[in-house]
Length: 406
Image (cartoon, rainbow, N blue to C red; front, side, top):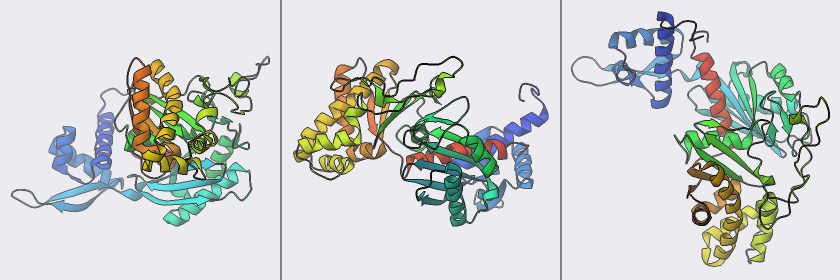
């Protein structure tokens, strides 16, 4: 659209309006003069665009600011209720849904137990309705939905192609969700959404190149290069649980694509994982708990073991040393191939290990890798997958609502 209307007054107005709206979202209420200062627009142009945005119901006066001589200057802000979005995290044990207004403020967050149902559309619809009721927002007012799921998402169709924990999420679910919700719906890998949240709110804020290592019940990886997620040809980038590593059997046949029959698209032929070998056999939750018990850290869950060891390193230090060595295999492989500069540890196990675990991993990787990345624990508060989903949905909604067509 931009290429077809170079330099037209209408296009320039649209660009100025969008720049002002993005500025108000990022920095909060501003005066006309402040908007002009940040955008380089004249006072007359800033006044004109604010009038346009007020007429469209996108901005309003929310107060005033004392200045020099003359009357106080009006403070303008984006109208929060001009649009709402929904973000969801879908897992085998439940669905967490959140609703946010166009400014990014989360107005409601709920978790729904699927109660044994394996119908994705019904489960998602129930969670969204519950979140809307809590937020006191009609479902029809939601402008976009982004759903985070484990497994591989086909970058061409947008459907989940491989989610061992969610067998009912298969080709055709995305179209069914869009029909049911009657709004734009996007399905994204959950670890990719955690990386989006990390760049927006956490340890990778403003960083274009970094990797996020997800350590939880299972493990995953997300890579951001040049500010863009790297998904791979078939959406399988980041399935690091199948990485061959020392100390674990090779994951032969575990996640390997089946032989491609004539006329069958390779992205639809993922096998069934066992994770009997590879990196996942060393750093998955079951393996971490077993390792902790070997060192006398006897808490009931892997997360409890790691948290206890990080809190009492006199007792848990040797266990953390060995765990860091295991995790460093995957971090080193990523670092040698991509040199991201920053690796963020996330997921419940990553959070539990905190700085003591991150520091150990950074030291080990620095010894066995040609470059030494910074290894940090996540800085995202709350549910990182949900926050990433809401952020991605807001990007979509703002593109629509802040455009002239919106």
